[in-house]
Image 1 (cartoon, rainbow, N blue to C red):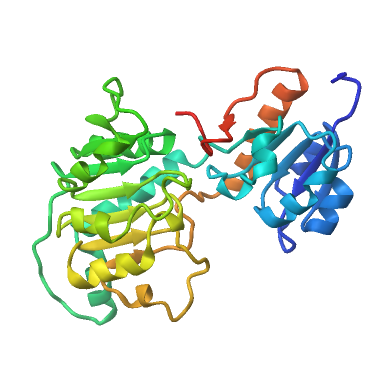
Image 2: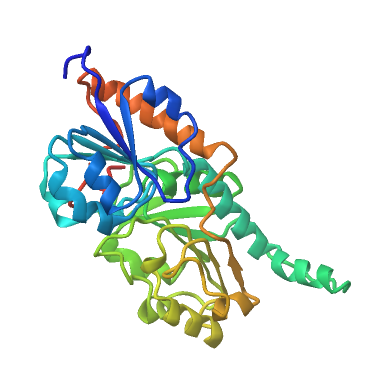
Length: 326
């Protein structure tokens, strides 16, 4: 487009969400319109060339899609884009980018923390402290433990890097095997998942939600894991069948789980996971470091400048696969 022509940018937010920090810098580059439901999207989208999505209300966007007459690019301010992948968008020429890279290190630190918490029995120590109980125990060493990272993309690679840094042995699962990734001991193809589950001490889900990964961790997967293994999910909740996970934990098929994402969010107050002593729960916050909202806007602006100059965007999502390439 002409550099003298001001582009129109629609920002899709939640109804109760403040404008993204740094939005003034976006307004300096174009006309910014805000939307938060189908009605406001139908008002904002006509003429818009760019969308910045901070709230993933797929039904509203899909319903308003017919009025998106000039849209060229949608940027999702998250690593996962599963909520955006409705058929009309997938089949369109509209480019989709994501926030890959913003949360990678923070999520990796979270995963390392949970593995060490399990190894050093911190959940029990905190319960004992709350009860003013002095109870000495021996704990595990993390060094030498086998870590299987399901999803060997940019987040998985950061997890592997930190795990390897303390002497753990990280293996990855990806669409294709590869032997040239220095962060992993090895990266195995999807077909090798169950073989690798049988030897892993920690299984970390860092995969995107796709039709292939939805419900991947079910009764069969838990039965393949070691009884001493722990599951950590920082990917997407529906990758794990929660009913099967609870059954596996209760039967001792696996030793514990750390969950940051769930099939149903927020997790209901009466959900059985809350009461399980071998489960660590956090409310979908593994990547959210202080200042992350401004970092997302800055990343969008960097890509926006590339788009405005006619340059290639970074973090392009393969819409049919549902994620950006690794």
